[in-house]
Length: 485
Image (cartoon, rainbow, N blue to C red; front, side):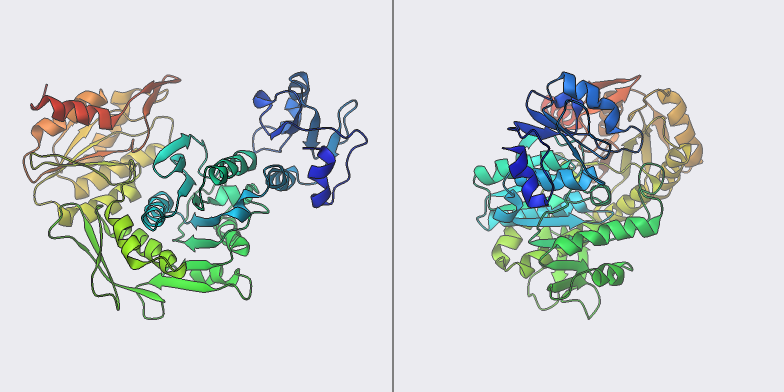
């Protein structure tokens, strides 16, 4: 695409030298001859320092907030992040405008809700893509890992174009507050956006300055949505609603009478272990999801609300929810020996408490935990996990998570201090052995919950990531058909 054609819709003048661009990138390592390199400002490094490398690699033009560069066609703008997002939309032909594009935002539950919506829309007969924390998918087929919950704009528009060209009509996206702050979705048009919840998070150096900025970034998404769906029971909803432009339809869900979609109850399914029933006022039958927990019921309520707002048939909603499974998010591993097994990403005290309180009504026997804590992270996090485990579990096997530069045994000892002898525990540094030990100790009716790794396929130690799959370890254990080592 000609540089002049890329800049004209943005109202930007073309440098004296017009040229054909082969691509866009903000990563100097990805520059190939003929590409435009966007030198973006960062929290820790400045893109301008990589301009010489990009030019050596063959960059044909540079986008920057600095002065024109000698010998290189330069596009100089006050905010290169926003400009790059607009350029990416132009370069890839605005694929967002060819899709029913759904944005999911909130502090918690984005990944699960996105999977629910993906499965509902697929059940409704739509070829559906998904972009989020676990990667970019068409249906349940992984296209590529994304690195960020919401990718940089060039990657994002490239993926959406690929999905459109592959026949997708609908795409569900997780949109993070960081993505909004960094302008990754600037210029995009969303068919609908859903707000789940908001609690203090992602506040600190390199993220958000304070809760007010965090909340404002979440709210900004809804100025790009043609339909807004929101959690009427969340304290931040009135603020979010206040940012929605006049004339945009609003549909709410919650537990109070004023919500358009009102939840009557969220209860364990008495007929399906580790499943949940979501009862909606005015609907004769509850919706069933094969995941435990009140919070998963709330995520399902959000998915039901957005589906209804889009006019999706109720049968497709039920079918999609009944088969949903999210890797590493209260993921139930099927067994045939009466022992329940769960894989979850919970990795702090708050998420431990929420998960354990949700699991208790589902489990007739003991809750056995296998977990560790990340190294080079605040020690308070591992202590909070220990306290939560002591309050909500019956037995624990402490092991490695991502120890990074720390010693696994030292991390486990800090967790053990907070168990206060309230529950029995073992320390087994090797996570594979720890998992097998917990399974060997479990009896029918017990639950073994593997916490912390979730969807991650590695363990990071001493600067090296080695492959590690909890699902593969479980497959191996149950394939052997024996207990223990």
